[in-house]
Length: 82
Image (cartoon, rainbow, N blue to C red):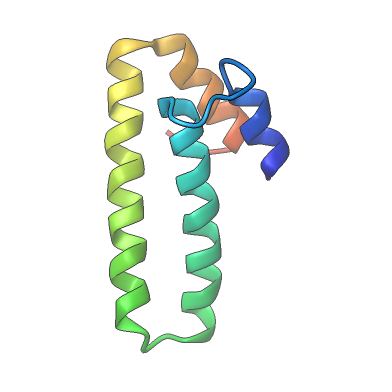
């Protein structure tokens, strides 16, 4: 997964661009969803998962509005459906 994030970076030390943030949130969402499958009653993690999903959704909307090419690039690299 780290490979995809480094491919999306705009420059060598890029850590804050929207593309990188979406990649990091996707990684976090995948780990939290695996955790939630094991521990269904863990409410704190489910809240964190919902927050991460909503934040990624907002970032993707921002990218779609401001940079359509980058938005499409992120969706294909991370295999997100939209």
